[in-house]
Image (tube, rainbow, N blue to C red):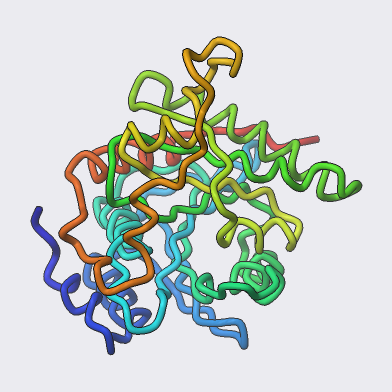
Length: 280
């Protein structure tokens, strides 16, 4: 697998990852700006050929660039940053789509309201992003199957806003599944919350997307559209091996697979084309 010239430095333990991403985007002539607050440094970017239409919902695709200190962070979450950069730098047509490279996701054990995504979600209006549908990319460099999160369903029962958002996330997942059906193996699963929870707590529908080897995805959850009673055996819910590679020195590009990058190229093009009508 070939990497752009900026990427090896991005993995260095002392790298200014935000600065490297901004420079890489500008070198590729991708329109971008830096939003800084007490909650972190966020890079807002837009495809050069993005089409705006108020009849349809705005979409924001995010990839967090922060990592566990002292680790390369290749899978978590440099792969998603690279994939999103490639999509933006290719200048593909996109419909109502913006991208944000986010900060302060790796806050283990801290409340979601302390995540960068919470503060960012609250600031979307002032950034001209309104109240978009949010798609978060996390750990997308290894495997050949897309896993679409079902974790927002855990918020049902809280009442009010959370029940409404959980339902809206499910509608968003259904819309996405329609546009990617037949293009890649897809599974639904309750994956651990990441920055999607911060966005949800900020009042925005956020759907987390990850990639796993197909056998690991099948153990985590059954195939989309197959009810549990129709499966040959119950999903075991075993922790995927891929997740054991995270947050340590072994999280290196050696674990990247071409299949994951090919899948993500298709997914990002599908997200760019996705149209969801604005609610009246």
